[in-house]
Image 1 (cartoon, rainbow, N blue to C red):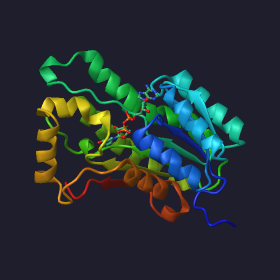
Image 2 (image 1 turned 180 degrees about the vertical axis):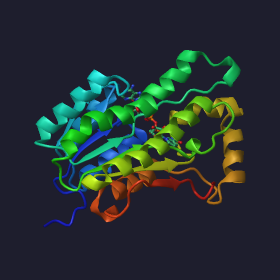
Image 3 (image 1 turned 90 degrees about the horizontal axis):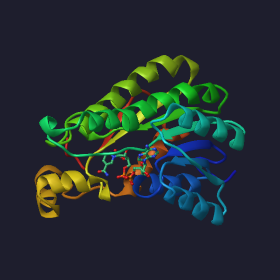
Image 4 (image 1 turned 30 degrees about the vertical axis):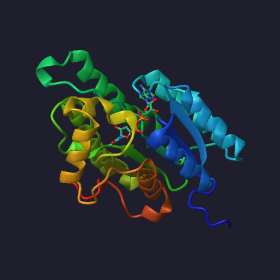
Length: 253
Ligand code: NAD
């Protein structure tokens, strides 16, 4: 007994090329999880190779989370590689900024496909595996933007709001089977992901001013602080928590 929180737990994690997903992969591996990482960016292969070189069980499967065949292949491959599946973490996401009247329909559709549809696909193709898992759990990546986002992020906000609603409903559907479903809803986290909306706001100085004015803790979050919440919701520490959207925003909302 090592006391590690995820010892031997079999986990699929999407979107782990760097930043929040990278920090989550690091923390889960350090806590003993066995990981299959799905990402469209080959830098996520380097995440898996780095963890494997440190002695963790981590592999990479190139995946487009918006594509049904690709997601099914990720989940089936993971279950085969790991000998089953206990946890699915849907972290992959995109953000584009545009006033709604100037937004191409394809931008709206892309947000829905990559951010929201991916969570549906993970559930559709992953739950049959989780039904045989140990302490099964799903953690989706939402955002405080799913409640209300800055101007210019309507498609992003709508897709993250869909994730919150889907998470709550899926928790009701899967609760009787003992499968927990939660999401995290971060506020500002200091990664390049926000570059489009920061540009829309007028640059880093404008973002810093918005953070000072709107965040009681007076700073952005760090990827490791979101990873800690992912670990909590994926692990036995949250065994009586389901259907929850865990806001992590320094007090902004
Ligand atoms: P990031 O860009 O590093 O992470 C996104 C990941 O998703 C990347 O690894 C990327 O390659 C992957 N991805 C994108 N499209 C994909 C696709 N079609 N198929 C597979 N993988 C794909 O940025 P991040 O800041 O680490 O964000 C991670 C998640 O956290 C996102 O879902 C984002 O919406 C959410 N989030 C971020 C913030 C923030 O302030 N940074 C706040 C709230 C929520």
